[in-house]
Length: 128
Image (cartoon, rainbow, N blue to C red; front, top):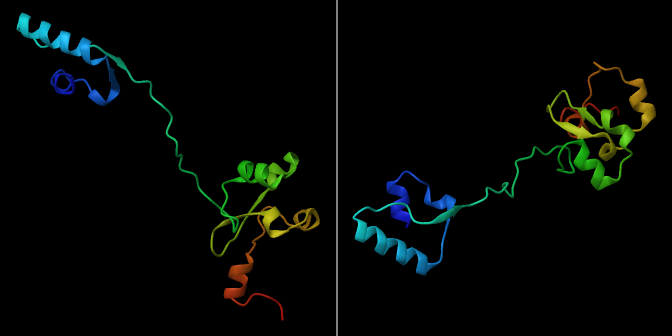
């Protein structure tokens, strides 16, 4: 059945074949008629892949905001401002993981540069 489907340009991996008795009977009929045609089968329903590629961010190694918020029970109103970008390492961080409060965020302007703790320590940017 597999080889016959291949010869007819059908992907055999995309088919569920009938039971063995019907396959044997189909094969015998094909031999008697002198014409091999595709065996009885039903198409397999395509399934969504179990794994999906997702980018992970922050020190918590979780995906973007929505998944992070569900896991951390963050208020849905904060969704728009939940991540901050480090201008040195060029990585994104969840503000809830960093402990950045609303007061600090309100003092920051949209184009302000920000440096994560790791980069600040690497470049000795902390005030002594």
